[in-house]
Length: 118
Image (cartoon, rainbow, N blue to C red; front, side, top):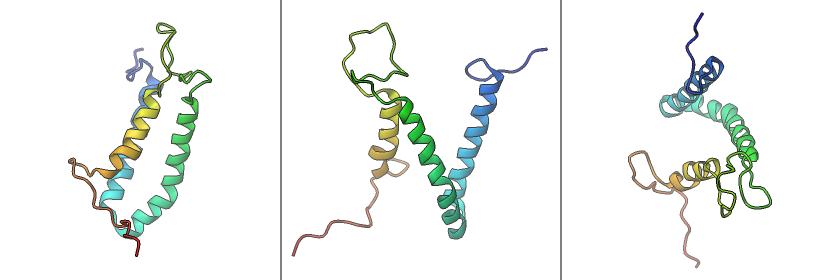
């Protein structure tokens, strides 16, 4: 009997991947198109879970004493300079750098701007 496998060659990963992507897609759709009450409930329930998941992932990629990621590090380049791994770079790009850009590349107009000192 043959089973269809996911991107890493295992059926289990394929199922996990589809399940996570569907859940994240549902969250985005609800956040964008849900009524105010639904979106508030979604944020209260899901944001802490997402933050916990991201913190856990980043903990696995925390640099060692040499500044290299023990999860992503390869033995081919033993003398690499300390640098953040893709997990940290992606999280930073998506959460911090791109936070000021709307989909489509337009900067957000921040509601809370600093006022000049009187």
